[in-house]
Length: 357
Image (tube, rainbow, N blue to C red):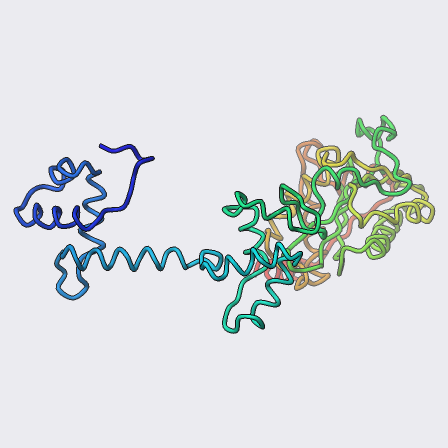
């Protein structure tokens, strides 16, 4: 048996022997031993290179079929065409960018097309041995991400102006012994949609506030957070301050945190980059919310009534961490004068059916 490094395609002489031996009803394994080939090679040869019309294996016809397949395979990709390769290499050495080559090719060679990404993949792939990367504008030996993206390290280095670290948050908030310390985040639906749901959860009582955001801009998130904080404050008839702090991640939608702190009189804290577990309460609530709004569902199509029904359902579900009280009941004890909102049974049923459709 030959080494795979010394492997070469079957030639006409070997195909004649295969034809002769197979005609004498010699087994495929014995034919393979006779030619010093793998039995799979012989099997594939007899199946792939037989005549389309007679369904018989003929050595000369098999050689023609194999030659045509080899030519077709080598010219399948644009850069495997010798003319295309010479054109791309010449223009790269002239200082043209892959995008310029892709756009100019149909003018210089009518009927020929090549994608910019194909040229890049060839430069940093099979064509790397030609060191064509040296002719690019920045001459990067290793390919980097597009300018519109950021690497993990670069993104982690970004800081929101005036951000206060979660390390400065009070111990009462960390130990969940005081209500009013909130966590917030955006729950996305379809990736192509800009809409999302702003989720705010109290760390102690697990009371949840939901609001649909038409986009993920900082101004939109600011309006929603102020509305949610005002709604939470309205639950106390005695007008005692309920909201004390808000914890969020380092998303760009939270860049208006200073304005929110001043208007709502709350402190704003930020998690460390890529430490989502530091706001585990809201992450857990988003996981529960996925039961009603699964991944890939369109948030844009949801109505305010459906979102309100979902919020009401979550807040009226007993939780083990609350000794099987509901978040509504837990917040009522904290606010002292809170009456929970009850919806008519008929309205709840109608909205529930619409949400699950």
